[in-house]
Image (tube, rainbow, N blue to C red; front, top):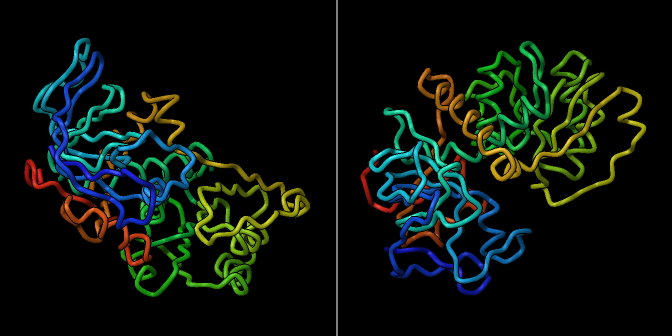
Length: 330
C-alpha cells in the first residue's frame, strides 16, 4: 500500500509518499481500502509538529477517510467486508489503507460518494456538536457563523438553516461570501474587527445574535461578544485569526452571555456511539438534500503535500479532498 508519511516534522513539502506494508485487523478493528480522505487545518499543524497530539513517527496524517471495508478482526459484528464506510480517527487517513476500531466506523448512504463522505465527517460533526449540544440552538434564533466558506463554516451555515435558524455568515473575502450565499445564509458579511459590532447589530435590528459558531478569535471575538444578544451563547471552535484576546467578564455578565469551548474529537474518543448517531443524522440530511458537502478541489495521494499547501495558503472554499484512485468515486 502507498501512504503519505511524516518522517520529520516540517512544512507540507516534507511529506513523502512511499510503499509500506499492507494492514491486517486486530480484534475489534476493521481495515478500510481508502477511496478519499479530507484535509483539515489541524493536519497542517500535525505535519509541522505543532499540534497538541503528535504520534510517533513515521505516520500518516488524516482524520477522516471514506472507502470500502476489506477485512474485519475478531469480535467485529456491526461492520462487514464490502460495506462503504466513513471513519473518523486521530491520524492515519493519508494512505490507501486505514485500520480503525469498529466503533469509529459509520456506514454510508448509497448516494454519497467517497469524496463527499470524506468532506463531511469532521466539519459537520463539529458544527453539529457546536450548534446543538454546546450552543443549544433553537429554531427561529439568529446564528452567526464565522469562517464562512471554510469547512466548519460551510457545515455550520447549512446545518443552522436546516434546523430553522436565521443565519448570518462572516466570510474572509468575496469568493467565500458567495459560497455562503449559495449555502443559504440570510445575511453575508465581510466585516473587519472595526466594523463587525455595528454590522451585526444592524443585521439584527439592534438585538444581537443568539448563537455564535466562532472560529476566528482575536479582535473579531472581542467585537462579537459586544454584539451578542441577551442570554446568547458563543461556542469557541478555534482562533484562525491568530489571536486570543482576553474577554472582559463584565460583557458576559451584563447580558447573561454564555461562552463555551468545543473540542469535537473528544466526542469521538469519549462517546463514539454519540458520534455515530450524530453522523447518521447528518447523512439523513444529506439524503434529503438539506446539506451538501462543499468539495472545493481534489488532489491525488502523490500530491498530498501540494494539497496541504493549498489549504495553508488560504485558497480553499469548502473542503479539499485527497483521492487514492481505489474503488472509484463510490
